[in-house]
Length: 152
Image (tube, rainbow, N blue to C red):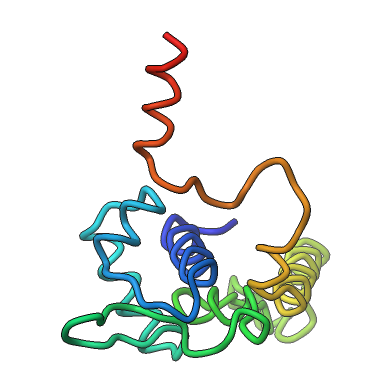
């Protein structure tokens, strides 16, 4: 249900949250998140327009979060790049349905509402603090390669 763009946006902000309040260049974020640099640049532009990240020019510049990780929700990130499209009227344009959704579209909208609520209640800080054996992002792709080569 989530697009590649949303996935990349979430990877980028989770990475930025993990280094907050420091800024990172697009290249650094791309390397850490395994997102193609050109695609990431577009995603970061959307995040900046959406008020999620701040772009700073010059020495020591780069991208950083506008809010603290404790204050930034997954929903804000998602809505900055591709807002969740709730169903308010019949998507088929059937005048007999109007705002009275059929059982199918009502269930789809209920699922979207549940996702919206869950994302609105989850902050980036919670994601980073959650105990797990799987960290959200690998430190660097090269670390995986070193580990594989060492085992070989």
